[in-house]
Amino acid sequence: MVKIWSLQAQECIKNLEAHDDKVWCHCVIDDGAKIITGGVDSKIICWDDNTIEEEGRKAAFEEARLVQAQDMDNYTRAGEWKAAVSLGLRMKVPGKLQTIFRSMLHTKAGIKGEVENTAESISGSPALDKLIPELPKEELDTLLEFITQWNTSMRTSQTAQMILHLILRSFSIESLSRLPQAQSRFEALFAYSKKHRGRWSQHLGTGYLINFMASEFDDLSLEVSSQDLNKIAGNRHGLVGR
Image (tube, rainbow, N blue to C red; front, side, top):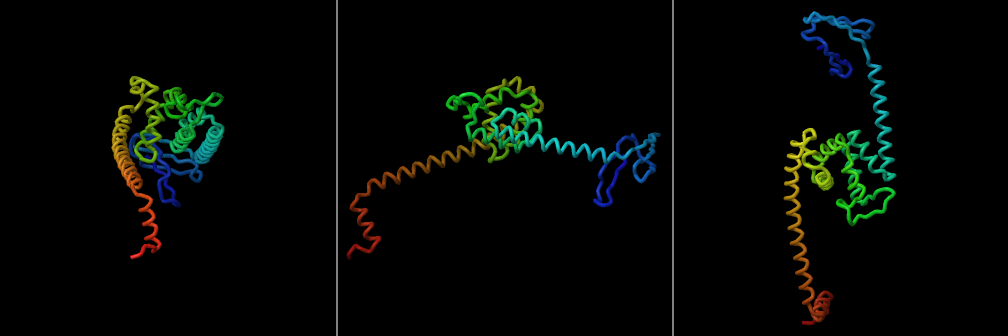
């Protein structure tokens, strides 16, 4: 292996891998435009500097990503949810996708051009209910990967749980088991879902206790007579004689 180092950054910026054994000699010509190497594997290899071409490809890639990101924002603002989610899954941007799904759930997004009926919706968003079952295999696999990540955080787990619920209702176990890394992902989902359920049960129990205490205080307040209230008010203003 030949390593190209940057003196300015003091780090290896490129590995040239073509030799099958140790490299014993090299020759730099044309001010670094070409490098010739020879090794124990009896190979002599000529390397051409393609830095300009690589930087051009990288710039073109970044420009294309910016255009796609803008398209995804435009789809979201226009309510083109299927196009926005599909593009986000192809771009592999879990943060953007999580924001889109939360927006669909919170706004109860409907299907464009159709009458909304959130009462019969599973998730509360008819558009999301329709979108998930229509995902192709590749995009479904990517979404399952992102859901596994979101489910590890309490902040994003609610969105992950709702989408996971839709996936389990929309696809058979056989079809899901054929997805790459399905077993490891579902094991991770189960482990964190169990933790979240324990926390939610604890919060629910606390909520019941607070409601019970509030109702008890309400009952006590009803037992206080108007005369007692007048006495309390008089004491507050120093009007009660001794």
